[in-house]
Structures are given as structure tokens and as C-alpha cells.
Image 1: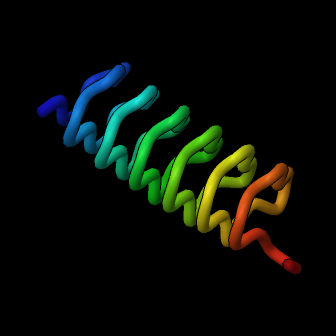
Image 2 (image 1 turned 180 degrees about the vertical axis):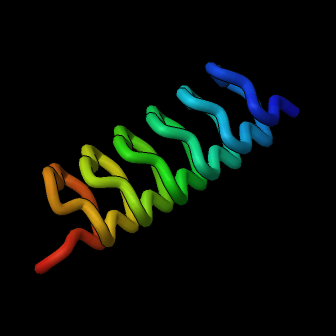
Length: 78
């Protein structure tokens, strides 16, 4: 349980972490890499549930990825 951590790596419950890597429950993280539940992340790479990310790579549910969407699902206009 790493709420409010700056960096979460291989951890769970990383609410509000700035950077999430290989972690779960990264809601409100800024950058998500290989993580799950990145609801308010700005950049998602290999992550899931990136609803508000503007840049998505190898990620899912990138409904707001207006800057870049690469090999991802749920991108705008697709």
C-alpha cells in the first residue's frame, strides 16, 4: 500500500503516485508503465484503463488519447 508515493514499482494501491511501474490501482498517477487502473494518468505505456491519458502505447481504454495512440484500444475516432 503506497498511497501518495512519488514512484510506485511493483506495488499495489498506488493511489496518487506520480509514476507507476508494474503496479496496480494507479489512479491519479501521472505516468503509468505496465500498470493497471491508470484512470487519470497522462501517459500510459503497456497499461490498462487509461481513460484520461493523452498519450497511449500498448494500452487499453484510451478514450482521451488525443496526442498519440499506438497499438492501443478505445482510442478517439476508432
